[in-house]
Length: 291
Length: 330
Image (tube, each protein chain N blue to C red):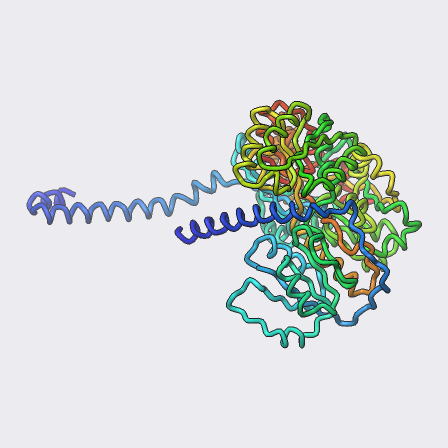
């Protein structure tokens, strides 16, 4: 360094400028190298824990609001973010090999993938203090039986695979459930409306959506009838990869406490839920098909 | 950066163009709106077609709403589809080649595509969508099916009631010339849901603001519908919204663009569902099924709630209805 300064003093203005430039450049390169090697360890410490969300029960393709609300709420407690998906395949590809994350998914979807992705359920959504929902098949009152009603499209907010799976279980006729045309609509209420306004012959919906229709538009509800009922299934599940369940405790606690917070409850309501409950052994048996 | 900026500018201009264009055309078409879509369906049901082929004509694939519909349609149908874009100026479509494709059915997205299909493929089954107020189309042949671009009147009323159960009187500006039937239809539907719709007819631009002032004295909310006399220019729209804002009266409307300008609740058509619905009609026809409703209302809704305004006006809203909302403005 002394040598460099000595040289600088000896040189004229232009040469001095060049020398300073060279030193600065060297320092810049040095800094870049330091940053390059230290960044990964810094970022590892402050790594974001992601929540990946995909529901096979809704078909909304814009989750901008949900993401903004969740991110802003969770950022108050740590480095957490939510990433919603509107496509099952993309969701499953994305979560493959992800270790530090939570998942929001339907109980039907959980049952399909928990083994392959080594998942454990942590929380289950509740609505009207119940963690179960019942799926129903509704049609216009003019259709006398299931076969006539199922000649046209069945409107459903669930994705096609989920819809056909529920229909099979509900009507006990796989051939009919596999061959019926499915009209995928964004929400359960849209499915009901599509029966009311003759866009489809049946709607695969939830008891909750039918109750809302009954309350808000009793006259339209009167024109419909329940054709078949399915088994009760758990509402939205919060799950974690097996090896992450201990580390996920803090985030799970934040999510569980959301309903107690005025901002948090609004976000939970956007998921059409009122809150969460811990998963008990009977829920796990139901989810994982154990008896 | 420059490209992004110019793209944004172009899409904004395009958006504005379509917005005002839709306002004008749909208003004109509402003048002949029917309470229920009913067409002559005394036609023998189509026969099931083996290995069917579809010709898809898009008026302009650069229009986002059209391209979304096309994509969803393609994802839903399971048979071969030949797709053409009338907006592509580089492409000169050889009609003979298109005819030789020998499609069993033609699906048209937008008015331009529908006219094209009517000209060259009128002996085929035609399914249309994304045409603003299809009722303006010359009488539809027996082989024409479609998805309307306007929601059933009861759908937005249902959503208004779900989100704001305390709102019982809704004011509506309409014109005798364009939307009197729409007003009557909505009033009838709303009364079944326990909502009173108070109308104020406007005859020209000058009568809009006095009519609005009168409505504001009686109504709990204003439902802004598509009427070229009520909203003849952008400035009138802003004037209406400003007046309602000053009065702290919520505005309900039918277009997403209104939400950013201050409307409290907008209930519009869910564009991707239109593509799936059209595909469903197509699959039904090709399978030889009888299609009960030849022209259907859209089955999907898209709802935006402006929570910022809800809070500013001190409105009570049903939190349990938040699950219905697609987008919240805060």
